[in-house]
Image (cartoon, rainbow, N blue to C red; front, side, top):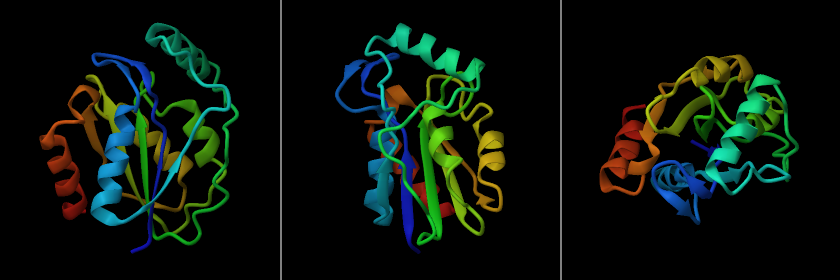
Length: 168
């Protein structure tokens, strides 16, 4: 199995955990890498979201409401050499952050196994799976994993990631 983890994660002020140097989703991406040996690609907005949580929420809501695709720092050109693609993100207004749409819409997922995973503070996977099914046309979408952001550093979250990988 040749795998890659494509993820978006935001540091700075996060809901329920305050200011952090590394975003919650990045921890999950690292756990997946640890268990699978997958390559990693971090999607980053060219102009970062605001450091302040509430301002970031306003920016993200505006992007979702306007179906906006922000520029990203670097574009992953292809996933052709991978069988398995893990897609990780925090839930922003019921779905993936719009920078993930910017990246994922540029890729061909035909014949790939896609494993979505998300951090959230109560919404679970929300509508992200239906969005991933639409974006990743031709892929087999596997069961997703959702973990509350405030819990990602706990050993139980690491165990959940390991079990999710083993069961899929």
